[in-house]
Each structure stands twice: as C-alpha cells, then as structure tokens.
Image (cartoon, rainbow, N blue to C red; front, side, top):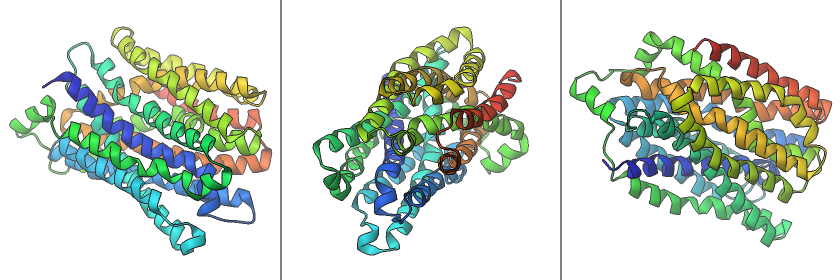
Length: 411
C-alpha cells in the first residue's frame, strides 16, 4: 500500500474533523453567545455557549466506545468513513441553522444536538487516524508517522480561524453576525468529499489484518479493554489531563479571554491563534521524527516541565500587548504544547495491544478530553470572580500539569 496515500488519508480526515470541531469553538465566543444564547448579561450568554462547547467534549468518550468497537471488530477504515460523515454533516447543518430570534428555543436545542454528533464523531476519529498511520509505519519511523495525523489539529484550526479572520475583515460586524460566520461551516461539505475519496482507496492496516486472520478479534472490545487494560486507560487519562487544559485554553478560550477580559480586537485574537497553529505545523513532524531517536517519554517530560514553568509568565505577558500575545501563543502553543502533542498519538497507542488498541487508545484520550472540555465554563466563572489574574489562571494550569508529570515518570 502506498505510504504517502496512507498518510494523506490519515491527515485529511483529521484536518476536517478538527477544522469542524475547532471552528465551533472559535465561533462560540464570537457568534453563538449572541445568536443562540441571548441574555441581558453577556457573561451568562458566554457561559451557556461554552456549555455546548463542553458538551461536544463530553460526547467524545461515547464516540470512542462506538467507533472503537467498529474499529477493533470491523477494521480501522470502516470506522473512519463514518466519523467523517458524522462530523462534516453536522457542521454543514450548523451553517444552515436558524437563530434564536428566528425559531426561538429550538435554535439552541438543535445546536446542542449537532454539537453532540460532532463530539461523538471526533471521539472515534482521532484514535483511528493515529492507528492508520502508526500501524503502517516502517520500522524506526513510528514516531514520525504517528505525528502526521496530529498535524490535522493545527491545519484544521488554521483553516477554521483563518476563514473566520478573512470573513471578518471583509464584512462589517452586522454582516458577520448575519451570514458571514456561516460560510466556513458550509464549506465543510467540500472537504468531506475530498477526504472520503482519499480514504475509500486505502486498505486495512497490517496489524488489523493479522488479528483478523488469527481469529483474535475481541468480541466486545470495550469490555475487554476495561477488564485487561484498565491501568493503561487510567494512565492515558492522567497523561492527557495536564496538557489538555492548556490545550483547550490556547486553542479556543484564548479568543474569549483576550477579547472579553483583555480588550483585544477579534482580529488580534484570531491572528495570535493562527500564529500558534502555523508554528505547530512545522514543529510537530520535527518532534515526531526526533522521538524515534531520543525517546517519546523524554520529550513528553521536558514539555510538561516547560509548561509548568511558563504557566504564570504566559498569563502575565499576554496582557502586556498584542506583540506579547503573538509571541507567547507561538511559544506555548506552537512549540511547547506541540512537542507534547506530537508524541501523544504514538505514545498512547503503544500502551495497548492491537486487539483493543482502537478502543483503548480512543477511550483513554477522549475521557481526558471530556474533562478538560469544560475548562471554558470554569475559566469564565474564574474570570468573572477574579478577573484575568495570572496567579489564578496559571495556578489552575499548574495543578493539572503536576498530575501528568508524575504519571509520565512511571511510563
């Protein structure tokens, strides 16, 4: 099987999944709190809109069980086709959804349902994309191959945030809220068609074929995972918690934090996010390649230490001006967090045997994602109570990083 096509199949779906998922996160603070959750108190509308953002994260463990079952029973390819359809289809429908002013309470209800479908689909996509790459990887290059689907996160987010940035530059605030924000959601249908075409031409991974030929397919993958690999599941959850909160902040909540609480414009906030993601596109494959030579554990530990040390300085400096916001987003998101994330897919997949690898990898990762997904709700409350305090926000991040650091030493 052509390795380049395999990597494109892994990456293309990941790009679309994260484009759709983070497009929602970007629009949450800029659009949804006004159009779908109107309130006399802006903080209440923002809190409600971020609750739907968190619901998408909460649904991801459900998706990991559903698609992990298909992936370990029927094959990686079959599961990944369905995750694409679910994710892209729900995003397209969000672009057509009437607002609260037009259909009343049904608007936020339908939005929540579509967000649930997004979360469930993404819960199955990430693990499958990682396995598609790592189970085809040549000997000695598993870290590099495992980092390629991780590129879907920054590329997808750059596409999502860049599309909103461009539209916001060429429309007035009224036009942007009226129809401009819908264009990136509707564009999902084009990306879905491209990714389905790429994925339809690939074969099952060698690891799954060997399991099937040997008759070693798990009857109920989730039950077998929690019965025989529960320690690995808990390990994956704990390892993801620390960087996960910072991840959600740096790639989503930063838009609301910088505009609502620090007074930056939408354009400045989106530019800072784009700079961080563009830096990730370079750093992720470089770190993935290095992990095959110096070890994934060492890179993971160094990344956590740097996140811990720079937690309070980050929140202190982003308030000093747009230039500092750009620099810190590039460093914290584009280099330090990206280094951790580059190794995560391969590192977590190596915790589980092929028989339950899709389910175990996905479930552990997505449970952690469900926990950190409610970070924006917590931070909105914190900001209302304490303001954008570097000590409060930095201290919160440091607590989660300590947990992940301790577990990383036990790998």
